[in-house]
Image (cartoon, rainbow, N blue to C red):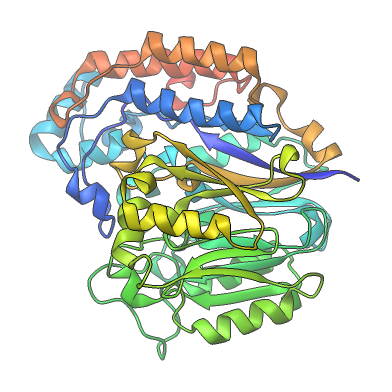
Length: 446
């Protein structure tokens, strides 16, 4: 049975802005209060999706969240008309307004953890939405993410949707950004690598920034997804790397099939982690591509998002891999030189393709942040909501939709504009029709 890995990218929402809400995200903090361009952001994301689709890769679409989210603001005590709620929030608690307007759901690597049916004891694809409880603006996403995933992957014969883990710091879960699957081939049983920042009491922890993913959450996810313990590996992220801005593992490591591309400083116990992966990956030999500070420092990795590149296998490359990188990689000579050395060496990497994702990158999200990987058999692929697959016609329709509904400039002081609320609702209402999602959003039930 043919099995493929699909990328489901998140559409950037109409309220894309730079509020600097994410502690530990260096780019988010550096660009706080700068003007954003939501229209350019969504078009940049769509261009990457279309390019991968044109390479013969299955490309899906996930919707943005309803923002500004008035039910959240009303639940926090703001009242009156919609315009009144926005004005009160801006005046009394601008941080809450910014959280209720955040477009961070664009980074669907944080939407959920996904395990393919071949890895799960019941032979179904398992989804667990991330609780994202470390930051308010992200924790607000969980309920709507859960609903969206059920609309995109609706068939219970093929898909299992778990509730998010309890939203407590002890079970902090940031989704697929801390989860990598290694395998001989997508359709063969794989090794699922869960990476956490906060472990047991005897394990070290970062000093400057929070460790968002916990070991207890990783263990719970493995149980929920009914994974084979012999093919499940837990590893602690290097706490020193977290303090340098590596807030998720996908900022310092990326895997595809049996290839792991990472920095030498990615894991707290590097030797032990690699040994466990090699032992668990019985059907294939682990191919490790590792860079150290002599080639690319952790700071340079964070600035360029080199390890947040996507690794994909277009049919034309006959099993070899394409590195999908952000433009910032090419702008930094040491990073670009490291990529060229990897391409020249004897390994599965065949090509690099660079994309302009600057609007996302300024908020701390690169190519891999924007996608959720879902391994699907052919019957499972047919069970996906068909309107959520990208093709040429849907791409053109979404480009027209974005150009019609999105602003080309947005500042923090614009978030209380009632017209922004109306524009966003019109955009999302139309999007649910394009993607066949029904009445997904709260305002559609009002």
